Length: 380
Image (cartoon, one colour):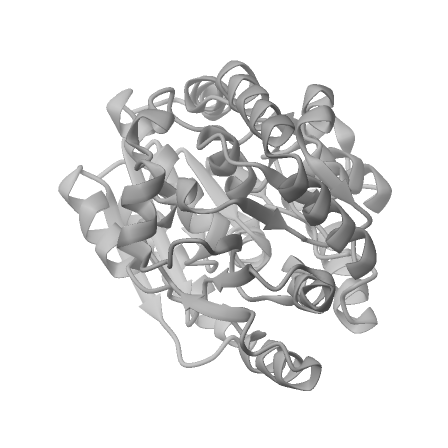
């Protein structure tokens, strides 16, 4: 068996999962022989169904389910990856997110002469909002493994700036921005149908955060803003993650249990986004968020933190309600302004949708990926 590209990830959920859902079928439709090696314990609900879908489309799939996220699990992943490379003989190995980047570059460093190693961090974990030890460890590791990387494949422009700050080799940088299919907007349910499917009451204005419940997403800021919002506004956090218990404690401490709710993991949420009056994306850092792109594609008003990744195109700045990352007062004011001026917010949302269709397409991303995969590799 011989593959063109073997994708490797430990991040089996969130944006990386969505990334693979989009690019793998599109690459295979263009004739590339693809494989996927997924390992770790962070399997989001429905990820195993994704793997079966990939198999049905001709993708070679291997999964290594582990009991914890401990770094020592990487050694077993490295061993199995080396066996897969011998069996599947890929021309390119493409690692997605930090732990896969470690496993691929450390595990295959002695085989670099026979294949190309590409790495997509999907956001570097070096933001001050993270614990100092994690920032230090991740930055040190990225610099150490740089020498075993044939190319960095960034999904957003902000990652390029972060890579330069880390001192990585810029002649290996490539930008293949995340994008959506051109017909994405055609599959968004009408507002009334979407609200009915989600069980949302009439007359309630809903502010939604469709994201994983992780520190990166800055959700404590959104919870804190609830005390400054009108009483008819409900905040719903859609997703699961390690921060759920901490957020639940914050909700109880602030006394906003009747106004902030957990919506759980809704696998088809991207098709129901028009149920919401405002979508809030309060992240501390991102690569290029699919939640942002999908909200644009649904033409729903967006309030987002003012991080570079959320202003992925200069024209988007005027289409978003921006607030200072981590500042709940600033966030509350941005939500107020969006809700109080629905006509203006609707126009901004329509403009954001137009920018998405012209600047962030899956077709453009796939074209760039195929070009990168073909550089220096003989396709089978």
